[in-house]
Length: 381
Image (cartoon, rainbow, N blue to C red; front, side, top):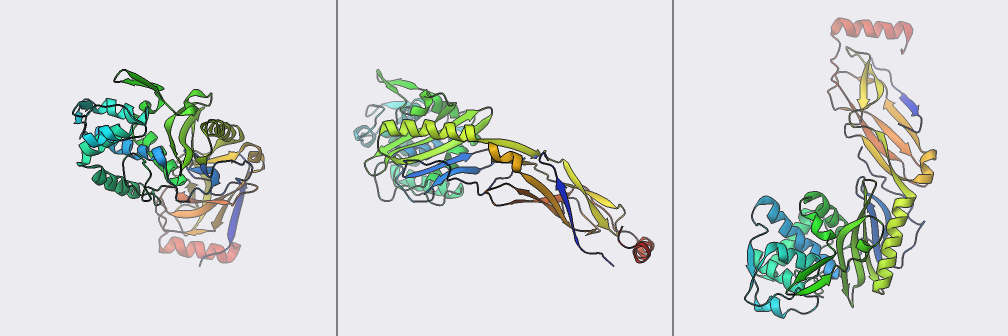
């Protein structure tokens, strides 16, 4: 015999680990970029979305995937920074941005990486692609496969450089996903993206990423430009241990790219904050138990809960815990026993499952009879 009903606990606004506010109001800022996305990486909260899922030519921003495949091989030991690849005539002849490698020379992987990341060298990309996969075409196929494995559903590659091709397409959201993976998957190699210059063949070239020279905590990643793509940038910046990733494309000039990237990153850091509501494993409430050896079970959010919120909206946040009470024993540890609902003005409510911290065994026959009689006499307790 089980009582039924909804038990609701209302919490003050200071109850905290890992969930994203899926639908923040993003109309508070405009951008002249054709496509744009701004993401807080701690919670995967999208702060700005302008046609972020539209297929677009990524230009040299697609070189980030070329670098990803090299970093992956360095991390698992298939390559070392001191390995050397041969410069083919195809790589040497390639136009556009160049590292200025010489045909027939052998060049260290580390130097080629700097040539790609700092100098945006198309020639360096082709040397790496041919050295790893035998041909640029085969390497591009691997780029596409890796994109799919990383959940980049709008990306496909025809070359390693970002050279204009109708089959070379990405989305701003995919570029943000890729940038996050570069940062998180390869902490030992990501520092190359923050280098501001590189000298090769007696030619010193500066990093074209304008945000590296601004005061917003930027530490990477990559610019892009073709006539079709316009001016683009995938950038990452950190302030107070909080990382934002910004992707812009379709801007009209280098100046616009520099100004928009600095403005939007500044806006993201200034207007939003990350707030820990539930620490990992913290007990949020005690859920009532029916026919269990204990009357309640601790309810928790195993991974905790951290939200990215507009700073001005935090004071209006409301948190409540809801149960279909009581929860019938037996209960296993990790079983969902209720939900936490977080409400913020201007956004969809966030629903977070609450799990049992411990197992609760079912009462034996005598205990169940006693509980039933108690209910008949006294009603729900």
